Length: 194
Image (spheres, one colour):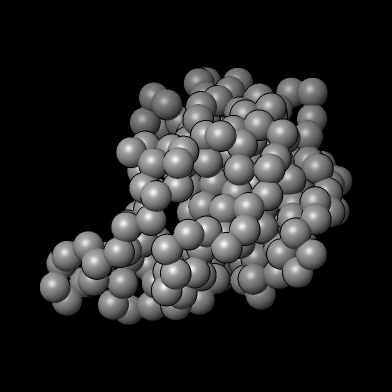
């Protein structure tokens, strides 16, 4: 259910078969398989060897692709649907099926902030969140078609409305304040967020 580049020559994928695979782009072959023991809903990479994966079994796992097993894990309150990493790789945003988003300090592996709102409901097991370009805000789509934006400290900034069905994914542009949201009915909305 997820794929990310690791530098220019590798891609790591996570799937519902409970594995993470590392692929070489030159040979187009898988050269490493990690057995996570749970379906992987999303993953992020911090460098050329470190992968963080979010799972159905309520765990976030940390992997060094040079070793076979995960180096550590964090148990969270619900199934993980999405992960996003701050640009400086110090904070991990995690969306969960209990309708919360947790901000985790990766230096201590402690939860710093929990983002939630009475109207925010995660719409599916692979609902995607996004940090903005300077990692100061986070956006998430809701089952009712709204897009919620919080600052990283947990203050709700805005609720955007244009969709009539569940928003499945959101993504901030990497260098500007533009936000895209996509819903279950295949409608994409482009927002300018200042």
